[in-house]
View 1 (cartoon, rainbow, N blue to C red):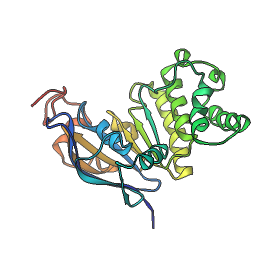
View 2: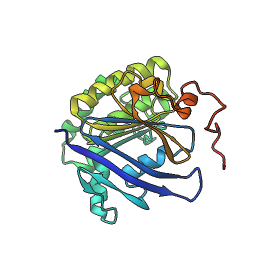
View 3: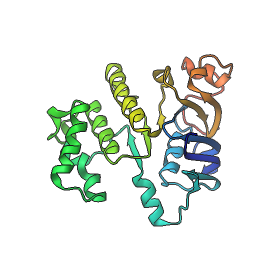
Amino acid sequence: MPSEILRFENVWCGEETPRNHIDGVSFTLNQGEGLLISGPEGSGKSIILDLVLAKRIPEKGAIFYAGKEGDFANTQEVEMLRFSVGYVNQTAGLINNLSVIENIVLPLRYHTRMKDDELFAAADFWIERYELTHKKNTRPVGLSASEAIRTAIIRAFIVEPRILLLDSIVDALCPLASRHLLTLLFEDIKLRGISYILSSYHPTIFVGRELQFMLVYRGKVVFQGPLAEIKKVDNPYLAQYRVYATEGPMHPFNTEI
C-alpha cells in the first residue's frame, strides 16, 4: 500500500475576503504522487503552499504529515518539517553574494556534518545533470531565468526532501527550456519517490503527466480530479480556463467581488 505523506482535511485559512483565503480544501498525497494547482491570480495557490511549509497555520481543519497532525506550536517540529520540504518559486530566491555552487551547498552546511569535499561532490553531480557546469562559479546576477530556477531546484533536491513544492517555476520560461527542465525534474522526482505540489497558470503544459489536478478560484476548489480529465469534464470553470477566456464564471483580475 502506498504510504501517505501529506493530507489536508477541510482546511480554511486567511482573511475574511474573497481573494485572501482558502475555504474547505482537502486532498491527500501518497509517496511519489503529485498535485497540480491552478487558477487565476489571487485564487489561493500560494496560501496552500505556505500552509504545507507551516508559514501559515490553518484556522479550521487539519494538516497531516505522514499520518500525524501537524503541531505548529512546536518550534522544533516545525523546523524539522521545513527541512523535509523543498521549496522553489518563480523568483528562485538565491543569495546574491554567493555563487551557484555556494548557494547549492548552503543548506547542507547548516543541516549536515558533511565535509567540504563531500558537499562539493554532491553539488557537482546535480550541477552537471542540470547543465550548469559553465555557471557554477557565477553569482545570481549573471544567470538567466532558467539557470536561476535550475540552481534553486538543485538546492531543494540536495537535502533529499520528502515533499517538493514548485511554485510557478516554468510559467515565465521559454517553452523549450520548460519542456527540458520538466523532463529532468520528473525523472528525478520519480527515481526518489518524492511527493510534490506544482502551481502553474498553464495546466496544459503538464497534460500527459500522471497528476492530481485542483482548480481554485477566490479560495474555493471549483474542480478536483485527475489531470487527464481536464479536457473531458463538463465544468464551466474548466471550460473557461482551458481556452483562457475572459468571459465566464471567473473574473480575470484579482479584484473584490
